[in-house]
Image (cartoon, rainbow, N blue to C red; front, side):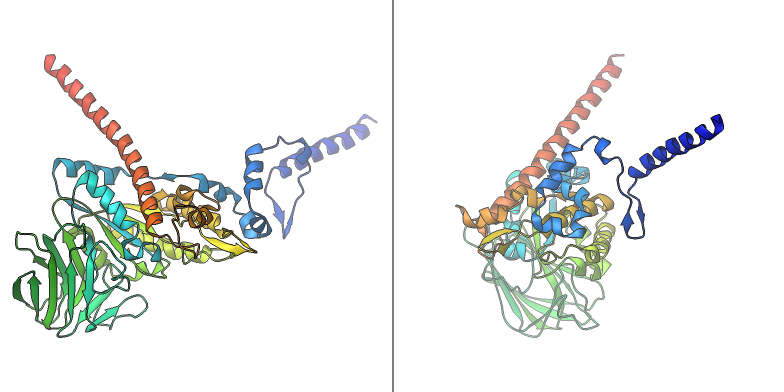
Length: 456
């Protein structure tokens, strides 16, 4: 009799234990998820509840977004990552002056030197340097740029990710290469309020002997270059400042990758913009190109600022982008071993919902994916979306005064670009000041230890 009573009691207790265990597992059988039998008995996670309430109605309708709640909370992160290598370079530059470059790769968000011009100005004000750094031969935004006057004739063949070069030519590290026929010329002039030129470098490749006519103001020279298979550097300077530079191809049809405008030691922020790109095509650039600029231009930071042309409306799934862009990051890391790699997130972007503009539902999702990507690749992350103000910040930047963005509710104007550059610079300098305090503290401790040993 006792055994008969004990058996059902044991089965009941055992069933409760099994159900309790299963209720805490994210367990599915086929497409069916087991019910949470003890949901009424579990403590409420108020933080998760608050995060869920913050999701828009559009996001809640999308299954992929619901599955991504964990990374959506990461859009509140300002930035993270190890900046020590870059800060060491900046600290050493103050002790032993040299020219240091920051390579800023991006899409139309930085066209015409937007963001980069103001970041360059802020960095040079603190660390020195005078000049725009990298310049292409031709550009669709030459007339829009205010930091240098740039003109060229139509005898250049411009190749890029869309118009691929002939097999014998390669794209440069900017994603462009320029082949000049006889008579092809490019002119640069000092912009109003900017400094004169002092040291300009020309980077090119010529499989045949080539020659250039170089005019620096009133002085004119003809330079002949022997054929070579490797990337060449031609220094253009007269140990004096000059306001104008004109280069004309006389023979040889060289392929030119770009110019570097420097004026003394300090920091130079190079603008590498490419309209409409996702950043994925950077992985197609020959490793030799990236390695060249890493060494010859002494590049200590690479910023990858993409996403504007990737985020769709309620697309939800960006797994197609994740792995190819990881390939881009790995290639950059390999080619720039002495540089700090930074992912700058996509900013806010609006769409019209009825009569009102509001944040694209996928923007927080994409930022969360960029956070995840930066963590997995162990690179630095800076959250432009959060810095702008997060949800519906683009609407405010367009509609409030001062206006900081264009009426397409996507692109920044000069005022907005200046603010973004300042936000990034302030975040970077806050981190740099933390680094300096630790650095000085370690130096003081070392000195103190040395003094004690001398006394002994």
